[in-house]
Length: 281
Image (cartoon, rainbow, N blue to C red):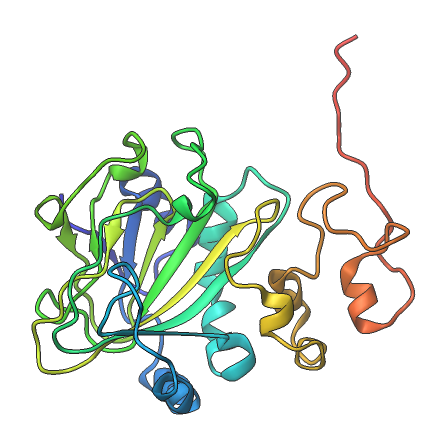
């Protein structure tokens, strides 16, 4: 099964429908070259200072640079993309709140080996979530063209409904080839991995992922994004960072205060709420 592509005029409903069937979809040229140029310029010094991975999974020729919300104002536009968030709304519609899980610029240099095929949701201590219950909706934006030769992310379409802890190899996968500015959306249960960079140029991807609000974030956004920076951000992004309840009674501050009210130093504006329960008595 090949990776399906949709135009950048697609709707969140269309993207979510393909993801439900395949576990992934590519939206072609969703981000402008200018936006990606600004992200790259704002992140260059941080990337240069990032060490290579220390094991096979992280990659001995791969730099993984996080903290995009704090370090790159341009990257915030990717985090808040309307089509991506609209798709997340539908993929994770079983929960009251989802959050920003991690932000990472991934640069695979020439000679970088393939990553093991895995599920991102294994980060949650390998908990066996029920098949079809999606706890993540993830993106990899193409900062350069993604080709099979330069290490395009390799995916197993349809594997989001397969059994857990399978041992798959590159032969089981398809490369998610796409032009610069395109984005691969996929769920945390999809088997995938970075490819081998056999070219003479870097392959750059911008990995921004979202998870349901009752799970711990992989990247600690409260420490990664200083509070002084968080206070300047749009409310939608503040709440994605985690300044919102993850569900009923999850994440409030002291006397049931909304975390965003505390961050902004204002009087309570969002009183406690109770879940809707249908009586069966």
